[in-house]
Image (cartoon, rainbow, N blue to C red; front, side, top):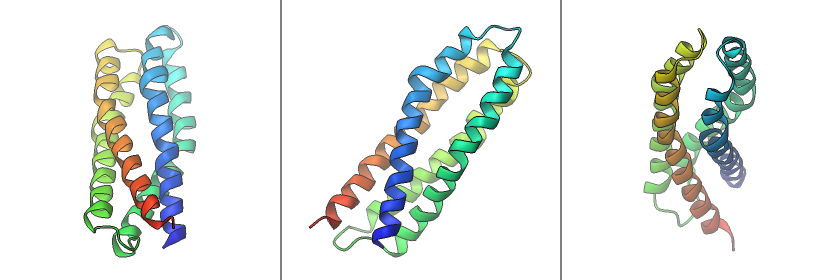
Length: 144
């Protein structure tokens, strides 16, 4: 269980730091790229981001589910369940809110898609932040 929790915490904390960077710096700067080169920029952004993000999201997903069955001693069952629920929110927001906006942006800069992407990304930012609190709480329960 210890390695499952540590792996989950590492993936969650890395994604939380990354999503805050994306939310505050990266996505807002999309508007500064310029229309002429934006489609190429977006294509590069999407492929390179996927290389970094997808392994971490998959590790987080798997270990979040494993923690439901093998939760840390003394940790209430609600915490791993809440963690899985938040992973669900993150994945749903990613594939039903963020990806469609990136698809629009892949054809060229679109002000409305950009605005929607930045606004709806707060869902993932908040969800990963709360997940971080949960995994830190679970880690604190295991430290003796």
